[in-house]
Length: 507
Image 1: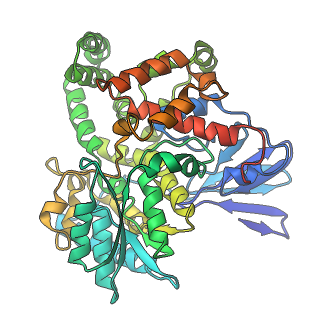
Image 2 (image 1 turned 120 degrees about the vertical axis):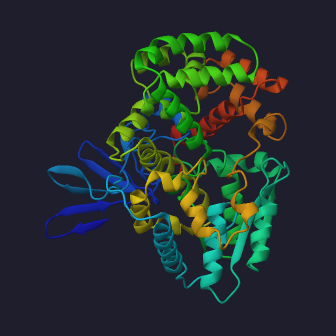
Image 3 (image 1 turned 60 degrees about the horizontal axis):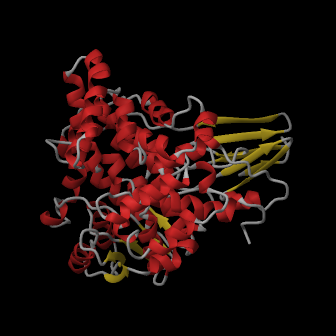
């Protein structure tokens, strides 16, 4: 933010990819801005009217997408935008965007060499520090590649930090340990266990909007662990969005190829009926068929929204109170995803999907999670793969070199092949997942019952408590897995108790 004294003009800008937040309030001749909502709420007489469409968005995405915030009169400045403010008002301008339009004709080997050079440069730039520096290490492709490049650029051992779980389905600590041993890092580990229930209220307090990506939990603990040894940590964020690393891209690719095989009239009229029939059948396979058929009936953009959505329309309609649905009218959270997909200038579906994820999920979820959880411990996180020159180059790489013969993140893996053992490079992606379903039957059960069913303002203003109880009982039976829905509700209530009520949340 810059104040031009001569022009009596304020200039405010946000970084290109949204690594850091910027909120503002502009109402009745009054203007305030800050990197946290709580900074604005600390001022007197700031209204806390909750946006109903933002609540709907949150339960679809697990975050509130920009430029909205959860509060009616507080907004986010979108990434790559600046604002000019003077006595006549303010204006918003976009100063940068990713373009997938111009595809490079160079071969895969050339692109791999170029990408390697860009990543080495970006890593070395982010290693410049006059305070202790280290890295997050999950044992996945991106973080392992960053650690390898750090080790190659440093004479001293790299400090690495890893989080593990007692549940082997979610534990990547062994993989991280292999990379740490290979590069002789100074390695630190922590296992997340019952600490979750004891610390969740405190962890949730760092989000001044509802936020429910469950990987916030390990991110909090790995940041806490890292801060004991370093002040700055490098991370592998951005690799999945820039180079097509998520499993959902495989699913979406299959769906879109199927979509192309059927006439639109058949898809729109026949498939919803078939989906309804599949939904009547017991078991998980018919439910997957129902989801697939419903998605195939939609446009590619709407199908991708359905892939990303954390709560189906069917579930929302069961849970939401009738007056809430009436007040929302025809509003639907898919407008955000579809709008960004339609803005993309890529030559193919995957390019448009990657652009959409970079502009929505990465900005609204991944980078928010990392920023809030690292800053909770005064830890600065830097992501070499999110260097804007890496991003601009990635946008020019043909989709067929990112997603090749069913292999996700093909080009990035090619770059990292000399540095990462093949069995680690090609193993199934786990990500920073958490055992949510199990937690709600064990560690989080008592805490969840307290917040989901106690009569208090918040969740019950929007949802039918008996329907919540029905989902809860189904989950406790072990025959249904409603962990994602229950987690979103729990995080919403924790947020509401701290920020939606009167008082100064900054205290």
